[in-house]
Image (tube, rainbow, N blue to C red; front, side):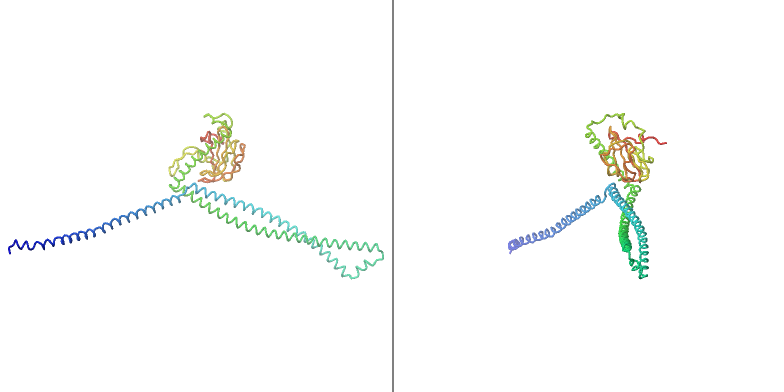
Amino acid sequence: MTSRDRRNCGGPGRAARLPALFLLLLLALGAAAAGAQPKKDDAIQAEQRKLQETQKQLKQERERAAQARQRETSLLAELEEIEQRLGEKQREVARLDARVRRVQADIAALRGDIDKLQGHRAGQEQALAQRLRMIYKIHAQGAALPLILSGEDPAARAAVVRQLGNLAALDARLIQEYRVTSDRLADRKEREEARRSELATLRAEAKREQAEVDREAARRRVLLARVRDERAYHERMVGELSEATRRLETFIRELQAKQRRLAKVPPGPGETPRTGFGTLRGQLPWPTEGRIVSAFGPQVHPRFGTRTFRNGVDIEAVEGTEIAAVYAGHVVYTGWFKGYGNLIILDHGHEYYTLYAHIADIQVKEGDDVRQGQRIGTVGDTGSLVGPRLYFEVRYQGKPQDPAEWLRQRG
């Protein structure tokens, strides 16, 4: 057999083996591809998990930020809340103190009645004792009474009987009066004991309320100390006070518009009218005793360097000092105004207004007409960051004026 024949004889077997090899190659490639696919899927899933974790962390951070914003309440709002609670507690303490004084006065009056009744009853007891001793002596004599009644004169016996009857009536009256006195004395003592018990309850309640006052005052001191000592708190408060000033200016413009509508008067001219309030520049009486400690105009904080503009003046005064209207006017607003505490606004006509803030006790109401020098309130520290004082403004056509130019000079 030639070599050609041998090649031809081996041809069919080799041809049969080629599809099998090809199939094995395809299976190997498929297996390799199948092995690579899970790795690729695992990488994608890992990236997806990372993305989900990042999104979860982002959501948590957003929630924390929202909670922080909720916790970061307005300093003015916090101060207002503390001061309103403090004011309520102080008023409650004052009411309890007044009730304590009334109860003490009642106890003193009852004690006076008891002393008088005891003295009166002692006199009655002495009189009854004398009567008993007299009756005892008469009975001790035995035949004395029959002898008295044994006279033959009927008129004399009748007179004796009448006298005995009068004595018996007198004794009965003395005994009845003694009983009445004893009953009144027992009643006064019972009422005194009840009032003393009420007094003890009132004192305990007043003590609890005073403890609340002390706690609220301590919270207020802590907040104000932060505002004074920490730049971040101070700057936040400056921003809020500036916003409060803008709100007040808007509020005053609204009041002016309302007053014009009520009076049916158009807006006044730019010039100051030469009547009423407008003629008193440099002549107005001071609204309270004290001295100006913060002037009108731009202010620079000595420590933090923050700049503000003050539309009025601060007059330092002792808490409780009288505040008087500087000119006759109409009360257009009384109440709490954020950043200013208790506030009174007076309309003096011709678009002149005066404002009085940080008041402790407002003693007029909206709609009242007040005369010059009339007491309208007392100095306090409501809404104040630096203690008791009166914040005072003068405004014309809604624009602030320097109050120092309107108040009369002091010697």
